[in-house]
Structures are given as C-alpha cells and as structure tokens.
Length: 102
Image (cartoon, rainbow, N blue to C red; front, side, top):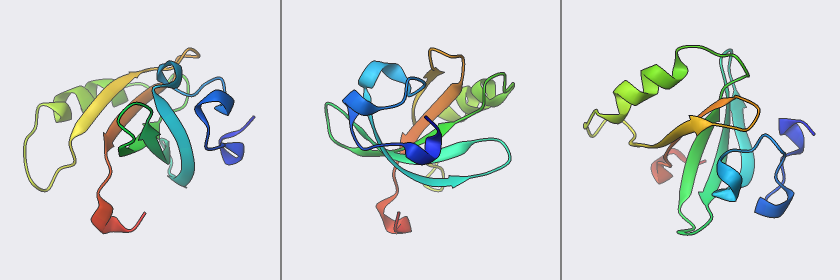
C-alpha cells in the first residue's frame, strides 16, 4: 500500500502509519523533496493534526523538530509529537491551522 492509497480509518491504516493507531489517517496534503504531509486526526481527542512523514533513513529531521518543539511563537505551529514508525520512518505531528484551508 502506498501513501496515495491512504484510507480514513485507524483499523485500515497502512502498516507504516505511526504510533499504533493514535492518529487516524486522513488525506494527503502534499509531498516535497524530504517528506509527505497528511491531514490526520488524533484518535482520542478527534483533533485535526498535520502529520509529516519522512522516508526511511532520513537524517536530521527528528533533531530539527525536537529543537523546534521548544519554540514558542505565534508564527510557528506547535509540535505535538515526534517519533518513529515500526519501519523506521521519522514522523512529526503539529497542530492543524484551520485558517489555512486544508
């Protein structure tokens, strides 16, 4: 299953989807040179979040976002979670900015 086939169900999420079902897969927002970005939902709170998923073996992303997690500024989205999928992909979860029209 590829990211393009992502479905909106925690029980049908692809095996590389992060955090053991904590995030319900949503639609793909985009793909850049370094990562794929998805709209998702926290399974317990049902809050919309943005999940950035890096390819296996990507280096530096986790450290960069751990530094960003400590930043507090109205122009920076809040980092909510950082981790690795079972297949070693780094992911970063931020709050969704509803004003951006996802």
